Image (cartoon, rainbow, N blue to C red; front, side, top):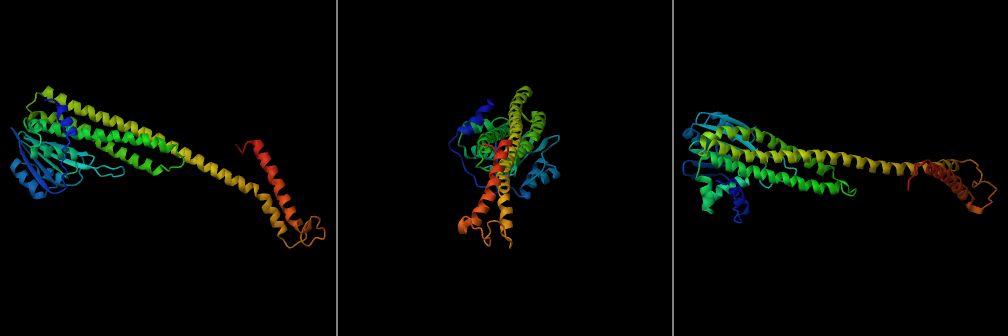
Length: 340
């Protein structure tokens, strides 16, 4: 069975069925097993299956919890696993994860989720609507272990696609970081949070997929080497996701530092201009203060020596203020404090 076949068919299919998020239970009968998909189920729905397949009560509690840490519990006739993936219609800044709970045995596979994992929803609809008989036979025609691999494979491929979106956002962020007219501090913070969230998904996912690969062999018709090869391909994709996120994380740290340096430089330039203006205004402030006093000063209004006419006082003040300011400007320029 060519494992890339199903993923490519799902992506290339133009008939995408939009399913509203609501309570829904689908039972799909395969050749040797039954796939039961529960979307937003009630506790009673899960308990019915628990009685039929002998599920542990603690596992029922875990799968009904909206957010539970990833885990894997193995039993004689089945095992239970919780995995996290990015949700449907993911947007930067949304920190919610989508939880997928799985019970798998020789003759059954039970998936419990909230309906916001589009690749999984598409798989279910393919099997329910008979929209693609060839694809449906590929999904249900083998064993529960093979179907579990297909589910994890399409979800990991979607995660890989999401991580590549991060790279596209980084390219756009690079242009904005060096554009002084655009504030990017908030965008950097949101993207850093998104990268860290995906890392918290991908790092545990690799560990649990390795555990699943060890446990699922007893529920697969494929040979051990063949199934291991399929899961090795999934692990390789997860490694690419982790590598992409680590590189993105380092890049974001660089962007954060660059934005901090450029912001400080811009602030220092503004402060330098304001300081220079204040410094050059000191002589006029001092001179104006003296001439505002009620005392006789050269060129004052009460002075009989009005050499320059009625504007003598004004001219004296301007000259007394401008000459020191010009001298200070020339001196600062010579010291290099004022650049071109």
